[in-house]
Length: 518
Ligand SMILES: Nc1ncnc2c1ncn2[C@@H]1O[C@H](COP(=O)(O)OP(=O)(O)OP(=O)(O)O)[C@@H](O)[C@H]1O
Image (cartoon, protein in one colour):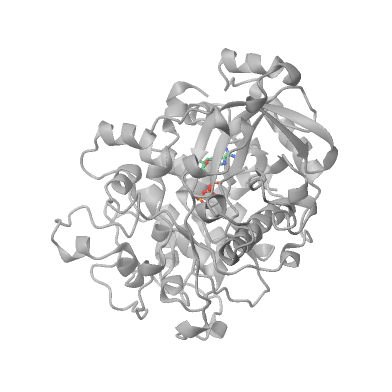
């Protein structure tokens, strides 16, 4: 990855804020009460009659999980020497934007963005809820992935020469702080080694690094992303691991972590991130990988080795570039395939957002691939990531956890009633597609709204609960993409299911050209 691509990675300041408990207003859903709203025609429905709306008391009290700052996290040897990455958020702010602000700049303009990076975690499924019943063989996946990488590497060289030279290093002679020892999720008996190249992402719950293999392993791609879990302050600063508060937070974090690991182990789709290896097999073999240990010397580091997406995340890509229509359509189509796969396997993601849609190759390489249609048709460009809030559901099951990211959360989640997680995912799909088409998030204040005006004063949550959005750039366009947005950003009993998104010509007519999808 070159400097330009590296500079695209953001620090935590540019992330979409998580929902704080205070931001859930006890409002009624008022779809007809929308100022200046364009709501599209009624699509076929997915039944939501079992919702039992309106009883806020049915909901568990959410726990707001505020992650610790990187500086206060439990640090593994490999992390301690790592210098902080330059703030791409600052770089973007310096650039300045005229007219309609790109998504990233709009987000940077929000005063609450640094105060409000929180995720609600209040509901945890039993571990058995994510049994790998629907998984296909992971080893098949790994070998097919490495096949793809080899083929593409022959045409595109993504790593500068100086980085490539690291791959020949002997792990025993290298600085141990930069070397990660891990175990394939398919074979935990043989250690594998990777060397750290650089930090590539910061999430609320993790830091993400690019690593390269130190010795060739047929089952592993040369480059991987390592997602290092950040434990919350309540666990790192607490005096006693035996205190009730410590144990309570530990239990929630442990449940969330094991849920993400189990979900990653059981999914298998080209457009979903691949879980390749882990630093400590206890996280795979033990249902209680944290609480079953002696924690008197701190929490064990958890490093998940994942497939690497050299193009970064869609938030960065969309906020720094004007993407051609064909690429927007392609990205959204692949995302639809990923979410359709999840829903067909009764998994809801619950944190669909631009930041969690990863792009497999740098933009320049994707644009160059267009000259070679074979490449473009044979290889996926998108991988959906971050399964920290996902949940396995029964076919008719409603979710009760009010969770997600502020800009992408559906009105029914804001209302605090049991909700169909699949329809809330559809809502987030509508937010994503709108953002790609309009270069802004649908429930941000309108660009024309003066600072004192009601539209600017009211909160994002308020606008979402009133379905208060409209087309700015493309009111006259008759693109079928608009139909998808209109049928996703609408009340839940009218909203598109993922199958209906898939059947829309904007998605459906592209699918037969994608050979990896068949
Ligand atoms: N496999 C990967 N390849 C490239 N970049 C990645 C990869 N995984 C994560 N990243 C980068 O790191 C960021 C944070 O990753 P992720 O969303 O998984 O962490 P998180 O702590 O769960 O985040 P969140 O704050 O959304 O909960 C992503 O937005 C992306 O920019």
